[in-house]
Amino acid sequence: MTFPSDFVWGVASSSYQIEGAASQGGRTPSVWDTFCREPGRVHGGHTGDVACDHVNRMPADVGLIAGLGVNAYRLSISWPRVIPGGVGEVSQEGLGFYDRLVDALLGHRVAPWITLYHWDHPQAIQDRGGWLNRESADWFAEYVGRVVDRLSDRVANWITINEPQIFIGMGHITGTHAPGLELSRRESLLAAHHVMLAHGKAAQTIRERAKTPTNVGWAPVGAVVSPADGHESSVDAARELMFRVSPTEGNWAFNNSWFADAAVFGRYPEDGLRAFGSDAPEPRAGDMEQIAQPLDFYGANTYTGLRARQGADGPEAVEFPPGSPRTMFDWPVAPESLYWGPRFLAERYKLPVYIMENGLASMDWVGEDGQVRDMGRIDFLSRYLKQLGRAINDGVDVRGYFCWSILDNFEWAEGYRMRFGLVHVDYQTLLRTPKASYAWYRDVISGRGVSAEPCQGKM
Image 1 (cartoon, rainbow, N blue to C red):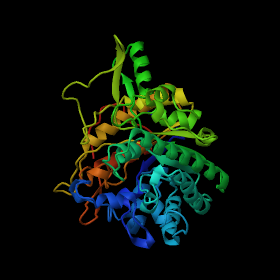
Image 2: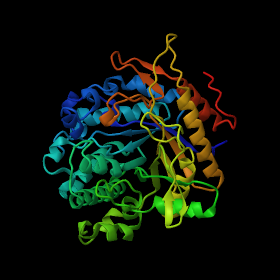
Image 3: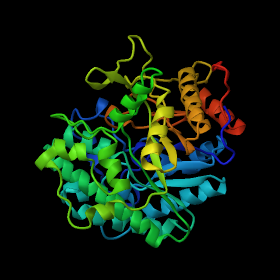
Image 4: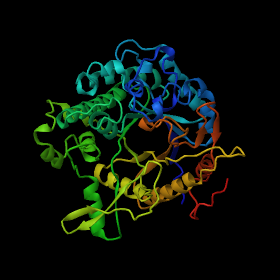
């Protein structure tokens, strides 16, 4: 399975999950620093205070990134590291870290793809209402402008916001992620509307202030639904379910179209408006136009998926058979999601697609011989990449793939219990050990594709 010669091969991470240096250089707490200190919130009481200590080990980590042969690295910037007060004065040391990181990447011919918001909301902003405060959209745009002013002479690729479905759904509805709120449906929909305003204002700010031509997108996550069989009716059922807004009494947020229709079409989907009724936000004049700034790409974070077929009463979900493979997160292994997800997204939104995150949660360890033989990850990535290649061969406009993640890291409420990295991190010594999957992915990139043969597990 050979990929196009101009295909973007990348690897990804996020600031709070790897940086550490929680109070270094004037950085102030994010909502995740606060959340981690609330008993019972995070597995084992783990925190991101040290994480992978990336701030202090950045040059060596960039060497590991470059050693893969990738031509892109997706990173995120910590808002409270750059603007400790959330608004106002910039920390020159904090912003200077990203300045050096960008230079280090470019020195290895790796293009930085910068995510401006990957969940580490400044606690100072949360104390002023967080995403429930409409002014948050303007404060976010102010922060984005400071970053763009400093880095856009060398950075062309920007992602506004990562996975609003998760930080709204789990952070503001179920309370299982920071900031740990359990809002009413009306309040959580209002917070989501302000997030979408922030996305639009950020995209506008990037284009107005960038010093070089820009490539602007975002990175949502939503359920990918694949047909359970080869019938055309099952394809139609999967498509319908993938873009349906299906609110429940609990978490309404995990869907594609409520967020993406607003970002691309400038309107909320009719089925969602009907279902939410008076709880739906009431946009002010100009809000939807502000949200729907032109996008250059659709970034899709895809790990798993659902299956569907046409039932007697319409589309219905189909369970995976008992004993089907699952990851440490108990997510079904669903390689077909990297075929149908990009296909359905490209059909609906008419944008180039980049896979911004894809990877495996497992539990790897360093063997007695010093090797990390994560053959399950190799098999997982091989299966998914073959399906992505199939989509490209069928004409879907997929332009890049970012493996999650370069390093084992802090996995939010799961703490350090799960490992996603191509590089093993010993959290006591912070020693990095490239895994077998690191060498495998390097070979995939150098050969521009995945062997059609089943993974043999060679190191």
